[in-house]
Length: 634
Image (cartoon, rainbow, N blue to C red; front, side):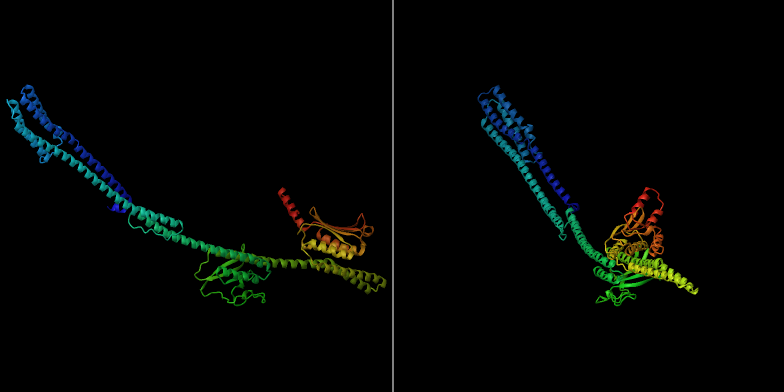
């Protein structure tokens, strides 16, 4: 019974088994009743034939009474024997009920008794006697016929009773089957169809992302258990879906916030990398925007002092005062917040300390304060790491720019000192020797004519020194339109073109960044000295400057179509040519001044630049090294 209550399948199987059992019982009962009624028709026929034999016996006795004889007697005896045989035949006796007190058994015994006790003796008397009393015999036979009719009636009633019993049983089994089917249909409708409908509705609502519908099925069968399970699963799915939507919404907000922060970092990078030394003014607005987007703050940036091994505060957002080491008191980038916040150190906020470093070099630290109890997400930490990387790059580039500026300044001072030593210092040394010579001549009271030559040499030396000083000032006052030797050469040719009154052609074919600053100054000074000589002495109408890099050597040629040199020689005291030769020796090159075949003068300088010499000194280990060298030269 508990199984039927807990299992819908068990109830359906039980209903099918009940219907099948009722059908089987109905068939068996029908077969039993039909089998029991099998001889009823034959018994009725036999009983009916007894009545006909009675009439035949009466007729035979009447014929025997009219015409006695052996044949008539044999006929009467044959009919009497046939009646007795049929009365005791199995076709009649087998259909009688087994109970002795049954009405058919009583009627059969009465009929048998009346036949054997009343009629058989009278028939025998009538056959044996000489005369037959017909009237009493007829009355006895009529009574026998009445008994036979009553027996037939009982047989018919018995058969009809069996048929009625069979009908009643069929109706009973039909009613029972209908009841079982009705119960099964009711159970199926309320415990199968309705729950299935609820489950289908639940599945449809779940497909529409509506997880609030519930079947609320009661009972302990399979569908009720399935319904409760699906209700629980729907609730869990609703909670999971809501959590997933919340998570997706949170991730979406984080992505949008990250995108805005990355945009701020991108926009701030231009200010960081282009803001010069003013790191505070370029980084403070970006840090405040990041604080507003990430809901953190304040943020403090400190730079690491490698000499004192300490952290120097440089920038603090939401600050009430300037940093201790503020370099520009006209900058108010730290003081723009109308409601500044102090850096919390009383435990109400937590601090995230991030290193600002490039590789293994620690450049500073970034302190990020946030509210106590709130956790920084992974995306926020990644964005803060990107911020520290950007700040590290900016600080590193700023330091490299400052170092490069210092190196450039030192190189420039070295070049100026070298130029003064190679030109003006030599002239002053020469003048100092001439003054000492003049003093000795005066001390010896030598003739005035001998001293006059020394005065001439002093005047010539002073003129040369003044000219060299003016050339150096002109060179160092050049305002270059672009970096490198090409811009300086173009401005120099344009300057001397205005002095000479005609265009100075320039042919420049040198890879960028080939010469160092010292080599560039020497080459420029040689070209300027050669153009100055053309302006003073050549009386030319055409001039050209060619600077070309070929076969790892730099060739510098200055040509003109002037009067040229006398006998291909230089004047014995021409300081300009002497200085140009000294510059060529300094560069480790060859210097030559000669007349051109077409007329005029050619000044040529050829040397290997420092870069080319460094490449040439490397050992060549194969085709790859050679190709690498040529690639570097190109």
